Image 1 (cartoon, helix red, strand yellow):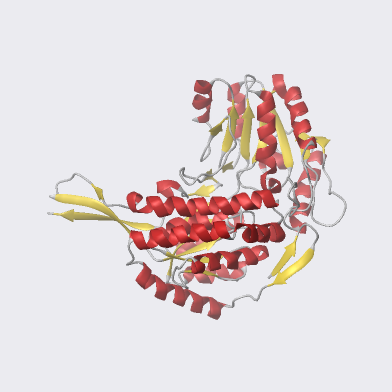
Image 2 (tube, one colour):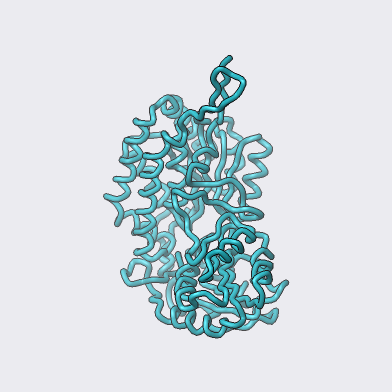
Length: 452
């Protein structure tokens, strides 16, 4: 497995892969540590999880540099990702015992209640775009619930994967409670089939999700999937247009445009479309594009050369089908995998970018006349992860938000994840929820106890 700096294409490090025998040995070691961990108290778990948050904060710069070097995230965003990972550790350290406390239920028993128990080892298949956050938002609740974890991280961020393993070890967790498996995608099926693996969670593509779901279903093991998104960013005529355009650029360009919950389909009222595009272009003009490690960089490279080729192919095909190019649409010359911020308008059904997710700095612009037309365009998607709606009429905003088919809608704000709020999607964006009290209950035995 190779770690390559996308800012310049230079090889950083190579990692030796685990074969199936080595992977099984690691899982056996995790199972051994879990047998003791499942009996630990919430206070013990809390102390160690708070330690993990402290390790993340004390080593924030070193950990953030690893993100920027391996997948090109601007260092300012990488630092924020490490801090957010510490936040989710704090959240579950402080909340897990309350969320998972016995729940008394009135029934025909003298006493009946629901208790929550760990189930064992959870396999996490995670992507490269948020190499720490994606992992900690699963690992913090899983470990606080008394489970153990093995991680199959993306091949291009193995430095980050082993850094996470070390964070938990430095925090004082049992040395094998959380382990990284350097394995190929083709080895995942055998890992899921291992009887010691009790559940799976995946963040990634539709294809990867379907493969993991299929194997997990065959093995009768629970899975949680967070897949792609084509989030709608709806701007009504009465919105604060300048503010909406400013946030639109932030929402699209976060992580160089490589986020599942990035705004991707900008659905703008025809009356304000020209004005919105003026503000949008002004905001894009001010972006600082450069090396991911430079402090003033706001937009770095795409994570891999093939990803740049893929998004360029989407743009070219959509233009060939009749869409209009407003700006961008080509590589930025020089070293690294940079792509110009791109705006495409006049998108129509059956065009490539009308339906497909674009994982990069491409703004797909749609227009509408009526509010119901806006909702129809927003819902005309196989995805349903997040979304954003802009209006000064908050009652109307709430009414329309209820009609949009997605796992979350943010009114007059950017779609984001927060440890306190459930996160996940519907349709081909996946199923199950992460974060909040919903997330920690995905991988526990919800047990009824009835006493006569």
